[in-house]
Image 1: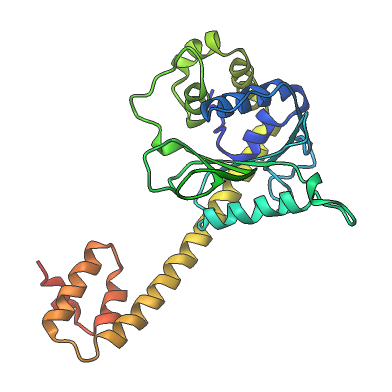
Image 2: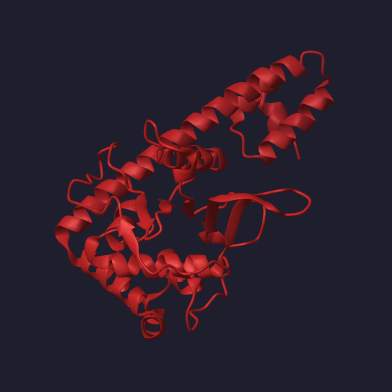
Length: 290
């Protein structure tokens, strides 16, 4: 049996945001918070639990997980399989919406509760080697916090070391599960993490369920198509900007300069037709580049 990919947001939400799996969500949140040096939670309430109304093809369906702690702190968990680009700004935008949405007309600022955003990414964003990065709002030189209301986590799965193996407990076990570790290692994880065992059993159940697999495949195709369209638009925009910029910059350039630029573009993987249009060189001249 081929297991579904838990990094697909539809499956991720089924595992972590079903009413029957609140203990799984709580355990996962606690290993993330403990890894960041924070106190564990005693309870968590799902604000948007998974329901059958979460249509994989409906753009209005919310596959993020929204939760609230006993003290009223808000938590948003987002699983991203493909690069959405501008993730830092996107994160701040959605964090600010969650934070500001708490204040009703006539409400007081003191009523605003802390908002925690957790981004689990199947790609790299930050220029560091940490799998788990945590951000707060602090003064630059002294590190004194301005306010504790903002907390943003980035969990970048590609940064998980290839040599990483299941341990007695902790965040690495959960990340290995999400990343698709060989099921032969699941037995070790099961022994040390009872809630993680329940997550695995949920994934196995979904993988055997024909309706769940159909919805998974629909969602996976939707995400792939969306990512392809986004990447295509990015490449087209880059190519047009490159072509215009080179036309302006190469008007007076020597042939040697054009050949040097063409060589760099070839090394970058730019298509031949784009280089031809941008440099004004012939195909034979470009093919002669060593």
